Image 1 (cartoon, rainbow, N blue to C red):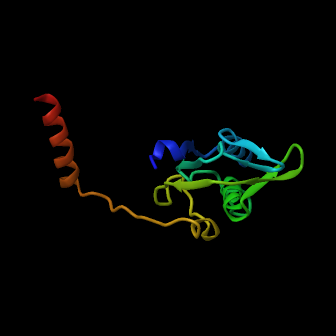
Image 2: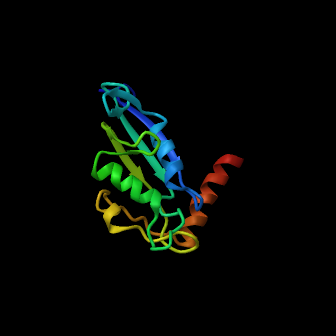
Length: 144
């Protein structure tokens, strides 16, 4: 089956000011009501969320990141609460992929409760010589 026929994608960019409410709005935007309290992408499709800068949201008083806890709840319990109408929204056919940089410079450690749901892949930093070779090749190709 062609990826275009079976998958939809949505990108969520997090930053220091991302809060749980804004994340929930972004999660709900591409999904539709299916039946009862069940929500998801249009039938026969799956929705892939790409979440950029997962470890950027600010820490709260006790060290948690509320947007990441909401994301963990959506993965763990297959849904989240509607805070206006006070009921639990079940979500189906969602896939999550995320990226983040190492902690430091405004980026925080991720909770093991969240990272256990992801396959972690680390990419080593390139040496200056490697970076120079890559960008020199690109620039030479562009200028010739």
